[in-house]
Length: 231
Ligand SMILES: Cc1cc2nc3c(=O)[nH]c(=O)nc-3n(C[C@H](O)[C@H](O)[C@H](O)COP(=O)(O)O)c2cc1C
Image (cartoon, rainbow, N blue to C red; front, side, top):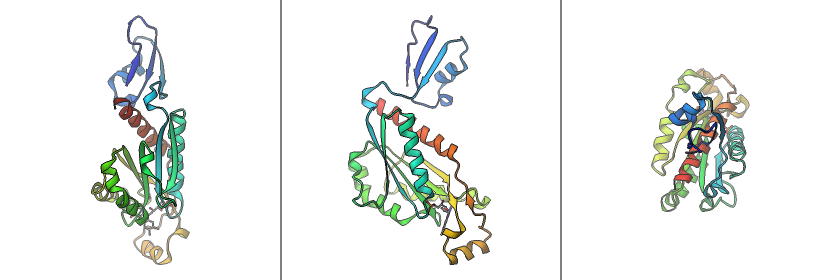
């Protein structure tokens, strides 16, 4: 985090570049509450040349498209909020030719969840790259898309822990977010549909919460800026 100028204390205007969430930081929190009447400007734009022109890959695995839309939203949010300091590329995990992850400064990888796991192409992507994650380490964030809001059992389900346990065998990641996706009856295979209905998992609908997606993208950007500024 950079705060300038803090001296002289007579300053009436404080310009802050925040690289941590204000609520999580006692100094920015104090500045927000503004006890002495400073004019406070907050910017997430970096003036540090080392954190400009960074490349972020957002790789996703989807079957019916809601994870792709979430990946695109995350990418747009990061490039817009960083005022272009971060260039984002959105690609499916099974893109041809496969993405060259060494070209990127950071990775965000997401998959929809089936049967409390990432779907196969996403697991294949992780397995194909796990040696590279170790030899050429870079910050990685992961997200999963399920429908935890659709049923209380799923809200308190074990998706998050199970995905983290499985991914943890192949890579380390900064954070993992379980997001709500869209669950369409017409996109569920008939046999699975019968099974779900029998188990009363039949509350289909669009559960995506764009404000939650945006908030997570913002938190990733702030962590990225902190990490890259420190290094
Ligand atoms: C066969 C099947 C299994 C699913 N299993 C889960 C699950 O275990 N946990 C969960 O939260 N959502 C589960 N879902 C819901 C999907 O994860 C959800 O609809 C997601 O938004 C689909 O993403 P997509 O549109 O990117 O394919 C399942 C959906 C299907 C069709």
